[in-house]
Length: 160
Image (cartoon, rainbow, N blue to C red; front, side, top):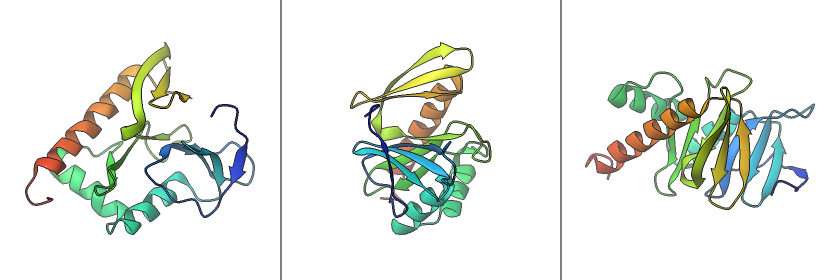
């Protein structure tokens, strides 16, 4: 997938094949979307795409975020279960307001490796690799937090 050209897709919808979303570096676009089927550009921001996907799944982004904060007290860099029916979960590498924030879709991650003190590589199950400007420790913490929220959510009889 590293060699694919970016395709403009303003009607992109997050699905089981979405692997990561980051702010686009291309002029006129807000998101660069890494999908198992290709790389796409959108004028919608990463948070707008995630908000829309949450609504499609019957919940609001704000409600999903509030639930995580209420149960696990993760007020910053909050992991989000976008759709429990489709097993779509995502976490930010930074505060969503920061330019370097990348949203990683948990179910696709195989492993992560450090490149330098402030840079890491995410290895996805299909062989795709993405360099993100955060430490390996932060990525590991975010993966752990996402896993803890999925476990809490799936083991709570209220949600089943």
